Image (cartoon, rainbow, N blue to C red; front, top):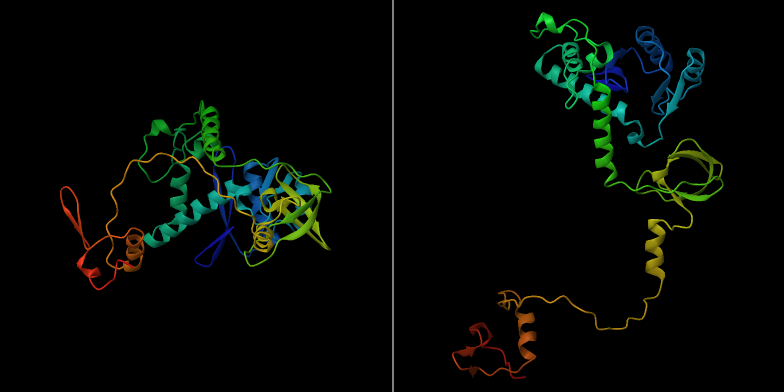
Length: 310
C-alpha cells in the first residue's frame, strides 16, 4: 500500500511474471482491502499463497477469515524487516515513482502503468504482460499488427530463473548465514531504535527459516533472525561496558617482525609545529654550523632565538 497526492493505493504483484495490479482504495480498512482482493481474484483466479506485511489490514481477524473462506495460504513477513517481502516493496517503489512522474508531467498515470506492463524485462526479452497472458496488450504506442496475436513465450522460465540466481549470487557474497535458534533458547532482542536497550527473551516458536516468536517477560514479539542474538553472545552495549569496567591488561613489549619499507625522504619541518621540531632536534645536539663533506647544515632562521645546546 502507498499514498500519492492524498490517494491510497494497493499493489498486487505476481511472483512469476512480475505483472502488477494497482487499485485505488476508498479507505485503508480490512474491509476495503478485502473487496479489492476479491475483485482481483475473480479476474486472475485465487492464488495458492498470498504474502503481505504485518499491517493492521492483513493481521486482522476479518482478513484471517477471508483467507479461510477463499482457501489460500496467507503468509506475513517479519515485522520491521521489509527485505522479507522484497517483491511487494520493489513493486510499490516502481509504481509510486511512476505515478509521481506522470503527475509531474501532467500525464495519465494509468497509461504509464499500461506501458510499464508492456515493457520487456532486461535479460528476458518478454514483458510482464507477455509472461502472464502470452500476448502484448494494445497501447498508444505504434505497434505492428503482427505482434499483437497471442504467442507463448518460450524460455522465459529459464531466463527468469537465471536472473534470480544471479541476484542471489551477488547478494550472498556480502551476506552471512546465521545459525538457527532452538526452542527454549535464551536470546537477546536488538532494539528497533538506537536509543532503546536490548531485551532478554526466550525463543518459543519458529515460524519460518528466519522468523521466530520470542517472549520477553509478559510481552511476545515476532522478529527476524537478524534482530536476535543468542544469550551467550553479549550485546554491543554490554561489550562496551565490559571493556570500560575491566582493568587494563599488563602490556609486555615484544619484538614483532615488521614489513620492510623503502627508505623515505625525511619530512621537512612544518611552519606551525615548532614544538615537535624542537623536541626532535634536541635529541642530538647540533651546533649552529655543522660541517659535512659537501655542504653546511644550518638551523632555520626561525630557531635563532632558541638555545639548542641545552
